[in-house]
Length: 320
Ligand code: ADP
Ligand code: MG
Image (cartoon, protein in one colour):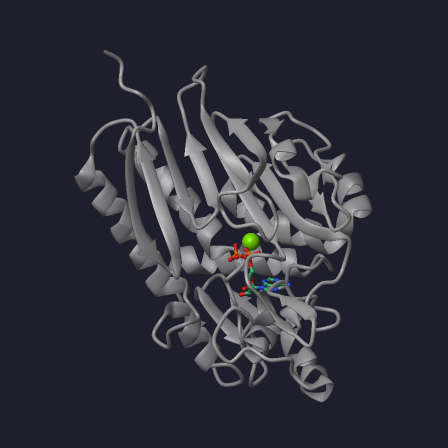
């Protein structure tokens, strides 16, 4: 009997979210190794604990460069390059993220004067990186880097590399909604649900079917708080210092690698629907599905996946 792909599920709660691994065979030792590797990467990249490699960079802001492990350097280098593009993604957004605390206890709307004061500390050009030394220097006191928008995608790619080294040819890793899949060519592949915004994980707009690659969503419904009737979500606009305000509820990026999905879901969210669609038309490997505030679902291309909608099951979204 051929084994049913994806039949074996392993999961753990890590990084404040559920991490799920699906394998085609019963391999609990391999699953343990995967979760161990994720923990090791979290120990390097978290900004929620003082002892990570990233926090050692942040603690030395305005003082001195810090040598980081090569994989952390490579990730920060890429993230810094993207931050220079003038889009929404900004590696140096840390001071604002820490001030808002969105999704953590103590979140509040900061006084406008505080935001104005912190904005100059989010200039990515003030991150100095030395490839020879492998060091990172935040040149102004109070600066901090935040890998919250890319860490899970980076980890998903690293785990898939590891699984492929172990000759696993059918697997899916889901890091709290950041998904990367590997499958043999010609296989039926995987089905990944696209959530109805604000309706919880069970309510789906449809499913994305793909044999390999990554599915990453950035949405205003993932982490947020409501204050005096206003909804404040966790993707900040580096120009204003406030949560990004545009026509979108979520952007889902389908791409070969999850790190790109992470970067471009944030970038596309910042571009908004119209500019986002224009940009996507220039890309071959990056595709996206947009859900708009006025109830539309827009899927400009389907080269790497097939999207099947099931939204009619949810009367609240009948206008989609
Ligand atoms: P999630 O972790 O829920 O999948 P995202 O990948 O969209 O969410 O990343 C959101 C996180 O990224 C925020 O919680 C914060 O740590 C960080 N962040 C917020 N705004 C920006 C931004 N403009 N550029 C880069 N990172 C950001
Ligand atoms: Mg992201």
